[in-house]
Amino acid sequence: MGHIELRGMDEDDDDAVFEMMRDPDAVAMTAFTADDPDDRDAFDAWLASKRAAPSVALHVVTESGGFAGTAAAFTTDGDREVSFWIARHAWGRGVASAALRLLIAREPERPLFARVPAHNAAAIAVLTRVGFTEVSRDPAYAPGLGRDVDEVVFALLPAVDGA
Image 1: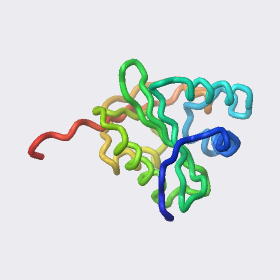
Image 2: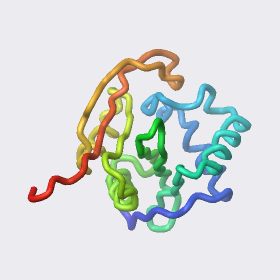
Image 3: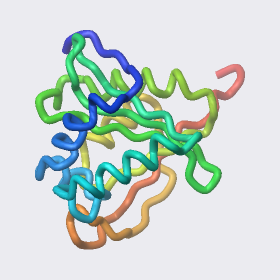
Image 4: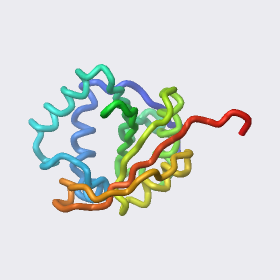
């Protein structure tokens, strides 16, 4: 693994993000994706809405200066959530864990939440490695798979004084 950093996402990143988010293997692992990952117009509209939302913090994950994925924080129904998507070339080398540690260091609110499909063992390992714990599990429709899967909600809880 090279040196991992987060930087703000800008329009020059859009093509790389689009290509990463339409990788069929990644879509199957992530499951909770766009209805049609190949629809560039829908992607552009979705990304524009995220950029316009004041509660959304979009970041590019870089490894030794090169594009390695995305990380984001956002508020949904009053809960602060985080997400990450790592490009295939950076899988399995600790990039996601390093990026998530950087992201949660920037997000002081606790608890922080994250959601993943139960079959995504890699994302679950990353979340637990950095201190998230499972708080619920329920079936939900996953557009990337076209069917219901178990969605697992994780939380990073506030530190307990004296622990």
